[in-house]
Length: 438
Image (cartoon, rainbow, N blue to C red; front, side):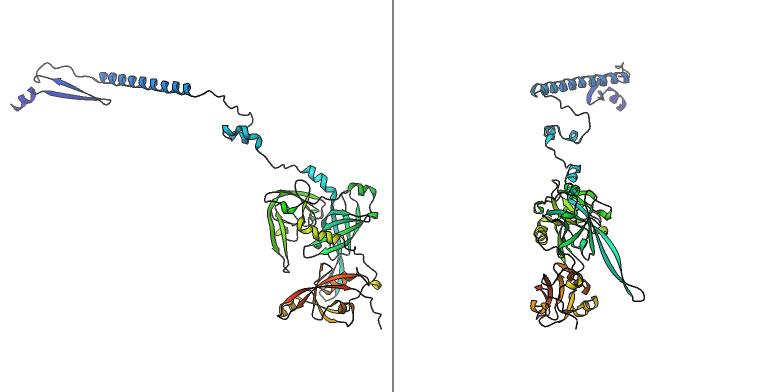
């Protein structure tokens, strides 16, 4: 009975096709003639039909959107890209019209160099070196070093050249080579060891007309106006091989450096190569103006990409003073001036033991001598002689050979104060005649 009841019941068959549901209803028993079943081919046709309808609707929708966009958007021309691939090609289209405003740093400095090179000179310092043999004997031998200079002035009788103090100090003779290859003797005009500056002079009468026409005086700039990243050009007699040119930028300003002797200097730092022999040469801006005086006294080969130059704005007042001093010309021994002091070297051992500054210790002062009249006292330590740094008795004798009786010079001495500290004292001395040996 249950089987017959089941067969007589209404039967439902449900089909699912692509999200659509259909219901098939059949009446009668299982023995009745039933409607044929839907086969797989019919299902495939149904699916294909639904897909076609959906695609048609989508195509109509996209077509409508494109038409509306074209109607409401104004027409504009396409930007034409340059044939060559350049940096500008990667800018957004809206910025292409501003390409002409892009600037760059010119890397060809040949015109600037050609203009300023006649003001540059090479310097050779010939000096004596005293050494001891292994048996304790002392002997002297000749040596030489190279440096650079800048022609900064000219008078009726002299050509004035600025360089570094360490380039010309301790010299027996100086030789200057000009742009045309001619060589002339030079004499020291003035020294400033604190700023590491020197001015030397060449007798105009010693120069040929061709050399006079070939050389020029350098134009000085303003180093106070420099900014980080400013392009610069360094010219100098690198390693003594002759004038060479390097370029770079200002890496740092007001860079303070402390030397081994405790003195300090403030420099322009640049990544332009400044090697041995470049000292005294010019650091230029791209207008060809001198904005610094190169110095390889610091840095050198110990560091890479760090060159230093004395700012011209700081150096100019000192250079002007040195230019106006009397040119140093070695005088005959019998005409050399006299101070009237007994000296003793301050060695490194004495410095460490007694806390004394390096220089020449005044062991005694002759009564009524030029030194006594000038105010030099026993116990003073001479550290500078007319701008030159003093570290030994030999330095004093070397400087004295340029002064006759009656000439004046300025000395800087260290004098011990009541609190035990040493203070600087400036002393102007007029040299006297040497007393005759009894």
